[in-house]
Amino acid sequence: MEFHWTFLYNMLKKLRILIFVLIIATICFVIRTSIKQNSKYVIDFLIEKGVVFKSINGDEMYNEYKDSETMDDYNSKENIILSAVMQKGNGIFFVETTDRMDEPSLVLCSIESAARVYPDRPVVFFMKGLGAIITDDDEKQARKHYPTLLSYKNIYFLPLRLEKLFASTPFLPWYKKVNPQREIHWTHVKSDACRFAIIWKYGGIYMDTDVISIRPIPEDHFLAAETFSTTSSSVFGLSPYHKLTWEFMENFVQNYIGRKWGHQGPGVFTRVVNKYCGGRHFTSINHIRCANVSYFHPERFYPILYPSWKKYFEVWSTLPTFRNSFALHLWNYMNDDRETMVPRTNTLVEHLYRQYCPSTYEAILNSNATYH
Image 1 (cartoon, rainbow, N blue to C red):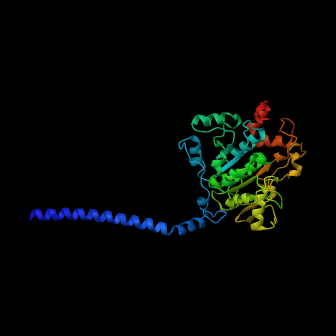
Image 2 (image 1 turned 180 degrees about the horizontal axis):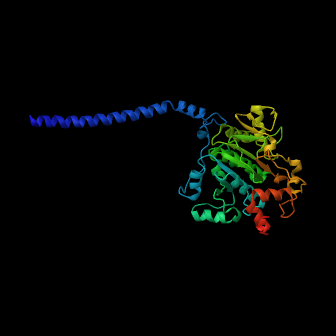
Image 3 (image 1 turned 90 degrees about the vertical axis):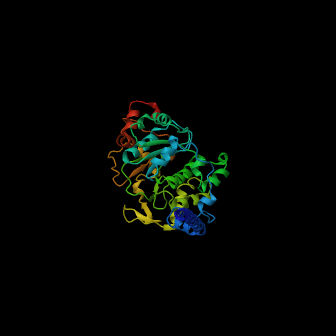
């Protein structure tokens, strides 16, 4: 009798285990089937929440645009910065699309001023001429190349890899097809594409390297009017994977005319903004709403418009306060005369350097030719 009960107990124990395994297998099967059957609803949910967006042809963007390369060197310093430092979507981004490494003083001033105005945010300079950042020593060497920026711990230098950056965006097919040798404005067109891809993937604020920051921008989602009829491409801010950035990229590709100056930069912004907002009418210096983001008055970044760009390099009897501005665009592409900041000339630009990028100013003052 004792043997009978022991045998029965062992059988029940094995039966419980079998039932448990069957339950787990059934649950897994149900979950897998449910996900497969309802994937459309999952995608629709992600689209609604702004995580996934429809491509030009109406497919989900990750189905049409595949990464062109795999991410190797996962433990490299570069990828640590990309994953850890920029994951908050609050970076301040600058881009150098040429192989130039000895940056002029205005570029260094722009980066330094941003690091000072946004001390709690990463300021990232993507450079095409910069080699891979694999180790801590690689990063240190990159930083040492710009001694005026060494004291700012929130500044990061990263290589600009175009195909990697354009992967999973509408730009990759365009980039593989375009012939740079036939492009008139290739340096600028590349820069236009890079700013959209960077903000799409990482989120934050993009600035041209001739924009001097003077006080924090109070909005994270914003566009800026360059004039009352055109929208700026020199500075804008959006969160990662924002629908508006995706539309900018699609508009860039669909309406590509590389030979036409500004068509891929301010032209993209203006076309999309006109679609959503039509005529923009400012009744005061305050921003208005457009495409569900803040749209800033020209005074915020362009108190001196491009026809008057030389005023930055002139002596003023009374210095402007720029009290309504967050940053100043110095119109470097207009500067065919290669005007620079010259110490002890009392020009407006000298006052800006002295106040907003003092380390760069001090280097020039000490006759360090690298920064002219």
